[in-house]
Length: 443
Image (cartoon, rainbow, N blue to C red; front, side, top):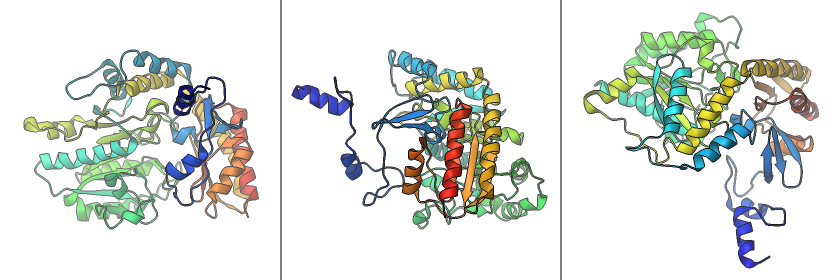
């Protein structure tokens, strides 16, 4: 091969006549993966391509993806509708700054979000990632009170065992004890925390469960800007599904004590819980809503923060401006794919698909409950969780699942599924069987 072709092949991973092989040694020594040590990194597996619900490794191994690429690839990989949307937008422009300019993909996406989101959320801030959408939400809440002459309302209240992202304001509202960011406790803003909800979804709700929250709001509401939580589904911090009555109570208490409510639906938005948005289970509208992950169907990074006109009007009063503006805000390529993904979802029988996935997960994961290694089994929508008695050995678990042709990535004590919505019953069974076999093998 000519030297120039060798260079191009190495750069673009598309040799003219040979199969591309990722340099795993370079990866190991130079590329930092999420939540991984550079001195003793977890093993990584090179992917050649992905299609439908399958990830294809370079060694020819095919893996059924039970993670939907961290919960985002709801339509699977290489969906022709989303591929076409990306290619059509590339023929026009990949990006243009949003400062002083606008474009059709952003407007179309904004219209869809306003139409679909809980009623009253009418302003849309398009940003880069889920963590940034939380940063934007927090900044909106703080600037709202500053604009109203109540700058003392500068703290945040949240429930324990929540997860809201890895940037600084987002880290400050993750659980400081059990969360992933306890190393930074001394430098993060000190927020207020109350106990996490205990009543499982669908179970009778005791009103006294809200007493601690009420007492905290009564004591500190004059300094609290907003309460932030993940509606119904506490995700990466706990993988627990809690009562809709709790969420209704939270909304009522925020109204009573004049505190804004921020709903982090980054993981649950666009059908994952069985509703388009998990807030719908409680019939409530937050003051600010964070969206991400499935927004583009897993194709490109994009997030959105929606708020009510009450928030935007206060911030914008007397010529005020919201002080945030990411370089790649409202990226046209991402917006075009996001709009296509949402329309594809709405045109599909997604409710029936989620209901079928939920029923199969309940049926096929329930036997795990009888195993001594298992603490609990939980299912809601297209989310299945097997909580183990002891933390999982990540490297060993990864090898175990790959040997069985599935891709799952446990964390802590949790082995869980969030598959693409297009998964077939036989493919889902392969995932659930692998989890059952894993739980049986654990001693």
